[in-house]
Length: 486
Image (cartoon, rainbow, N blue to C red; front, side, top):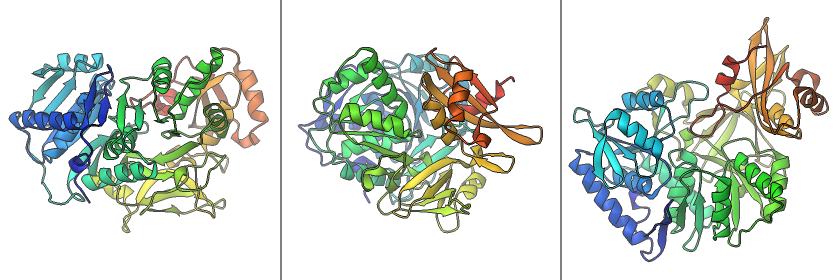
């Protein structure tokens, strides 16, 4: 297994590696030179093997350069989305104790705000930095399987974020498998909209694309117009969360417009449940199979993908990655139980939290995903919910994704989130939705009665103006429940 920074060593230097957020281009040769220069700057700042380098950024070439420069020095890179709150960033910095904190101030106003608040000083054009000379490096190992390359903090939708330690082996495995199965090659242009400070985009798009010699086109932030423009200008691969596909379709429908995507050859999604109805709409409009996948930060992230099996029309998350294995722990009568995963991508553990690490790792090397799933006889995996979010009402198991899918099928509903709340010695089902203004709670409830068994019906449906979101684009359900008033 190679070291992560070796992924682009043999890529042809004449091909374009990056089209930056502002249209600037970098060849692979220029990218390698920039990485070398960045590594020298970090060395001057005192960075040595085992140190932590934290990057506060949004999608841009500087993020890729700093990440690969840090791992070349055998430092741990910690990418953090610039849109986190001040309290979130302070908590991460306090836990990670980075030698250097970098801010992409030319690209991100939010990074600039964080840099100003913390007193960062200029390091190079587009960069400001904070340096702490008192930190102690972590142990360094001479094999890619043991040396940490990245520490990615979980989004914390159900608890405090944890620092997930991912080895060079983990990221190289995920990047190379993704590149090989998706046939990434020179001539491809990957439209990179999802933030590379999170594992899905970092590993299976940015690193995978570079390992295959493709071009990465960075969009600093998602907008419908920018995404459609990137497609029209020749993007060949687009992998996003389902909500982005939904927004693109709504825009095209509202404008009565035809999709223009002359080079597009592959579309995929992950990061959230895929509604089969949305999948059908996307495939009809795009004329391509919408590949669905599932992963988690602790797996670096790949666990399953529909690309590893025959095309599907349902919301299955697909088949297990090559060289990996899954099993169901303590299945119920319907075959649903916690999904366990084992493979080269599994994390080394949670930083400075051996107890939490022990809670999710079995003695046989399987990772407890915390997700409930069932597996078809042909190996296709179906998620049914989060273990922590399972609602037990009057002895019946209720899986929030099923109720959310029914809500999303109601005309006028834009987003849906379902959670449980203990009440009067039982659990009740709370549903929260955003709408386009064309529906109300009475209509939504009537729709659900036609699609769900009585025990799955929400006891309360609340229309909210907007969903509270994490920086990874996930809904903060605890915040919705805390703010609920019957």
